[in-house]
Image 1 (cartoon, protein in one colour):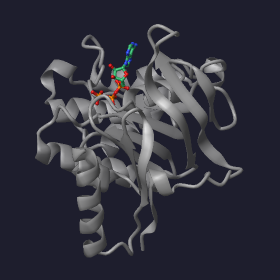
Image 2 (spheres, helix red, strand yellow):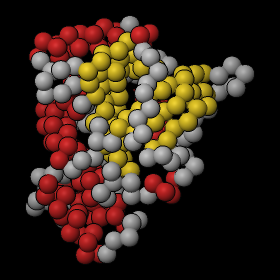
Image 3 (tube, protein in one colour):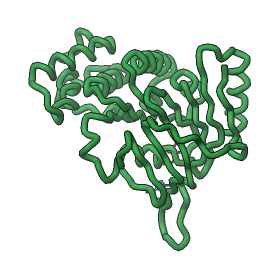
Image 4 (tube, helix red, strand yellow):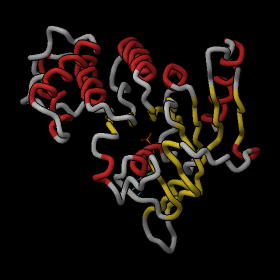
Length: 264
Ligand SMILES: Nc1ncnc2c1ncn2[C@@H]1O[C@H](COP(=O)(O)OP(=O)(O)OP(=O)(O)O)[C@@H](O)[C@H]1O
């Protein structure tokens, strides 16, 4: 079943869910001269509930990274409010230690550390013992299919394997919220597809909330329970929910609608 497919002009104010994990309330982000600013995000309202896996989909320059940076606490909105778990990610950065993990497009592994040591890195900032760090790192490397590569250095691993290490690092922290900025876009399509299906399964199995930035319709369909299509400047063009009952015909119609929206 497809839950409401809304066009921006037909959207009504979103209902305020008490337990929203991420909330944008009338958020704008401007760059440049305040007298004549460039508007990257325009009065955006968005709520993401705990346990949702949301693909933020939009063309280059529509404001995905700007939204991502505000969620990750890397920048503050010009106006409006962004809250995660009821807290301000920009002002209360320390409160979020261990609660958010980020997977970037580039794997960002330290070349002088082995795979297992790279996974342990995310845990070193948390209160964990050396033994616990090692145990969790090995567990997640194995979950990601890297048994036997624990002591390999990044240069000895393929691009897909390196990205597996960075996903293992994100899961090992046990963060409840995973933020992913096009983590598979530098990989070939077969590797990317395999990895994103595994990623989606692990997110579901472990009850995480995940926000996944992408400009690929295929990727959005593979990852998202919910696909938020953005138009420029970042405003919601469509907010689509998919579930097991969504038929192939419905998916095809949604795909065409998104394609048309991104072609404008
Ligand atoms: N620090 C900045 N200063 C000025 N303009 C910026 C800044 N950051 C982003 N912009 C502009 O805001 C708009 C949105 O950028 P953003 O990077 O969020 O888009 P995006 O959807 O993530 O694009 P892409 O898919 O190419 O990464 C773009 O026009 C960009 O040039």
